[in-house]
Length: 204
Image 1 (cartoon, one colour):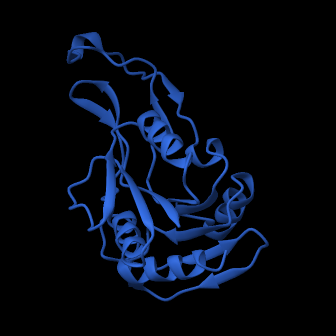
Image 2 (tube, rainbow, N blue to C red):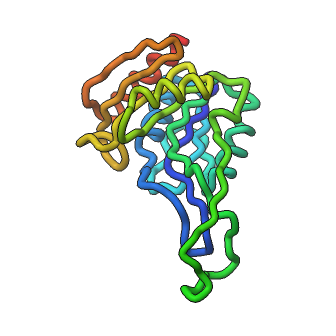
């Protein structure tokens, strides 16, 4: 198959040195890209700002912002079969990005934000797998996102749990399917989670 994987965070700049982002390291997405390539799939990895080595036999596209990631995914989706979206995309961006560093005297206590596009909702024509990194009501949120975004299934995890979430080498996930089916897994390495995801993808 021709597979797109998104990984890492996005950054939304207020000025050249300040931005909105999150702690995503890209480890989960890179593990999925590596496993997909190992199985012989043609893989395009769209990566936000991360410090990870590109897996073997993977075509990597580096981006910074949510809008850049969307453009790269839409381009790759023109000839892809499936999109596995692990990236922690910033939902909001500053309404304006200053050309020069803003001085304290130039800044108020209010930052005006505008909503970023939802990549999974926007991209059409491919089967889609999402991730739901939550801190509460994990399964309810995963079910909602799976239905609203037209996903084959979504990988849910509670990022407040030890060994699960951003920056770790392990993850404890639940697969939530469009028909409401749930598959629970114990704490596993992210490489093992990647194998489970690709096993499921092969059955779609």
